[in-house]
Image (cartoon, rainbow, N blue to C red; front, side, top):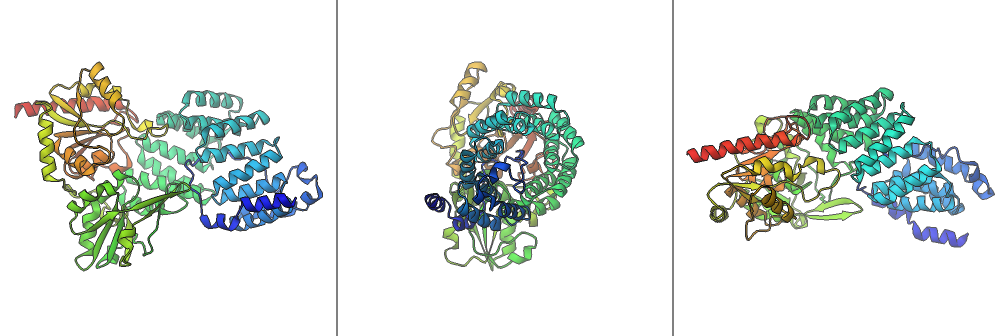
Length: 602
């Protein structure tokens, strides 16, 4: 027994675990159905030993602490219980549950595994392990354990729901749909199963059909916040941003915990922006900064944060503007940087921490700022961002995330400038135009078609390369590859199937040489592709960009016909419903043919 206690102490330094805060889960697993077993009602086998029976009252007290939001206290009590009964399955499960509530997922998994090895016939433990593995993106492990749980409890529909969701997250949509349809046939009044079917169709790219199943789930259980959240998201993708806001509001009011509430509020902020309600949307968008938001970046800056509510607060200050989210987002949010500089004024100083690849472009575009690269550390799935070179002198008086100035300076579409806000290198633009001229006499059109990261969740936002056929077959065009990553297969397909050459620009790394990428985008007559870092760069310097969307009321469109961020950008696609890529491609092909014709007539 003493050896077991010593090993337990070595495995768990509880003070260190509690000090670390929440571990960011690679997957939210928000649709997971957790076991319903109450710690306050232990199984009879948990009382088979006298030393175990003595712990039941303490376990019930720990459960009450967790229910009342006292997770830290519950974890400390669970450690005392484990010290007294280290081989008691329920004691290990109690510690695992407390650690899970605290967001210490990896360590929670260790204790669920201990409980499982001590009680291998308990189906709840298999499901617990499956859910934690799911959150940690260990999908094969999650699938294995939920299947074992289903073998032990074949009549529990929650196991089928969780398994279907795990199959969904692996992109195995047909398997997931078949499994959940069989489960619904056996239990047609189960709201969770209808919600799960909706999520599968949603991730497969069919929000219209998903909406029907979400509505059935809500009919069966009107108080289920998660289903209302899912329905709101599907409505936004389907183009009904106004109703999405309404459903997100209902879901927020029905949320059962802080994490669920924050997740719903984030979705609501994007729907407000998609609906063109910018003032409300930017105010709510602050929620992305809360640690309870699963994708929140933590910023290691000691100065007070400017929240964008009152521009007067930054006048005359030394203000640090910190890049956030992805590279394309940094570029897009710099739309408001000139307003920040003007507001701070000559008595103050603006410092910009951005991706190192953007420094040359940022310093040229905003010569009055002090710019340097930010540093990002990933700890337990959570990004922690600092700007050590810009804060080392202790002069920074306030800081703000890159998107926050939109709250002050972009409260309506009319607030956006009708001009480029970044400046390409003129010599590089001229050099690229010279190289492009060697590709032939046609219109020079830069082309992008995918993301560097293509998984089950992201694929629905990009069209298959084959659907580009009507665009690529437009005569009088010289297509230029601006797509970074592996492209040889698609370029060969274009040559073989469509008889089209996609020219490769020489002397450039399309992923890292971003000052050249911006200049190349400006040098092209036109750039066509999804909204990403490359198209954002090209548009920011005044290049003409045609953006293709799977949905027309995308949040970054801000309720407008064309994205207000860029004066030279135009939106295509999404008019025939979500994922209607083919009509969008026909629309682009027709517009491109008109452009070629007008160029020939000039």
